[in-house]
Length: 86
Length: 498
Image 1 (cartoon, rainbow over the protein chains, first blue to last red):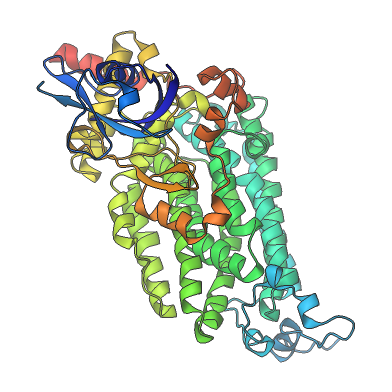
Image 2 (image 1 turned 90 degrees about the vertical axis):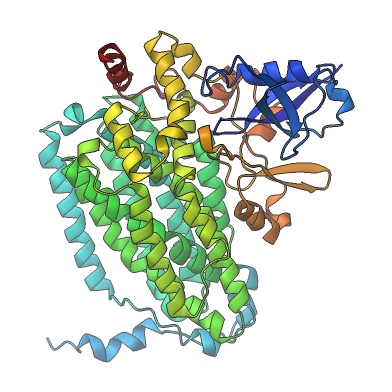
């Protein structure tokens, strides 16, 4: 269990942001922590969709229950959080 | 008494050179300060500045300019224009003074480097005037805002800003350190005067003087005009240096200095001038959009000047042109959202009328930038100001030191350009920012941007309040909405009517 700073790129937003996550967080928890700094601040919520996490620029999202520690992110790794149907 | 006509003695006095007897030429002009790049002295003696002036002429003109600007200030002070000016215009002045005044003093040392170390006698001669210019610009742009300190402590940031770790000050210092404090005389002539001043300062000041006049601020207009006319002269020092480098087989090196300087200047311009022209200047006083201004005064001018020198436009020219629809909108939104981290009060410039103008000037604005502003506006109109303020830091580019921004909303495209070096992950806002870094990694790699400082524990407490302390922003100094959210009211009424 360790804090890990990441660089967030949230769908629909205009700026990358510094966000702190924990290596024990699941990808769903990462998405929630990221949404706190973006959704309802500069990006409108999309309640009918789920938020998925992927490595910046990748087309594949991580499994929602995957832990951060299993993603082998570098310090300040950049991730995308996108709205998806499931 | 008979005076020899100017044209008979001018060339002799401006081209003074001598053969050193007590020291060697290398000792007199150390390479790291002079930057002659192996080009012989005889070649540097061909340096021919296009604008020539004698000392008596210089002093006489400067005296006139100073007495004009100071007289206007004295006369209009009684009029108390500042007390009735639009708050967006006040913010323009406060932002400008903080970002520029102390750097003018800095530019004086850059000029002094050329005055002492340039091997080209003509450059040394011109740079003496340049150093005097910049000294005057520093003085006048500290003196004018000083009169307003009684109105708000933010005016004090004319002097204070560059001595703090405010993010905007870090960005400005990073740029000016790179182009004028830590370069040899030849590089300074190219990066400071050609790359930065010709295109950006000189032209920006022209635009700003016109905006000031339109806004009825004749004090600021006369001040800026008096500065701009100096810039127009001393910005011409880089051209002759470039000609000599190109004629002596150093074209690629010359081009690299130009390209790095233009890109870095553009980024600073996008955060300082972009928001002022498209958002802070009251709608009725806006003549050109920032994009129109950039295309007319910067893009076309540079293309012409580079072509005259036989240089191609920089490889990133298309990227820069495309950026005119993106970067400054992002910088403005960032400055507005993180408004507590700046020393001026950002004007949102996002009322229904403003947005109509923005959509006309930047088709698609409402579906992209407007989407973010919609959320901000709704929050303000639903008493949720807290959601219009940040709880973390924006990620900052390792080259420009400015937030990494891109297109939001329906056209979402925000990209991080990465580089891993010696086990450290660097983040850049664009291909061109990363390219600048890659031209000389040893020069840039140790620099810590604001995020690096945060992550290494230099900012305490490690949250936004610690960041504000680190930036030396007191409660009376940190920015707030320039119009106290009045602009958002228009949407409330619109909804009611609808």
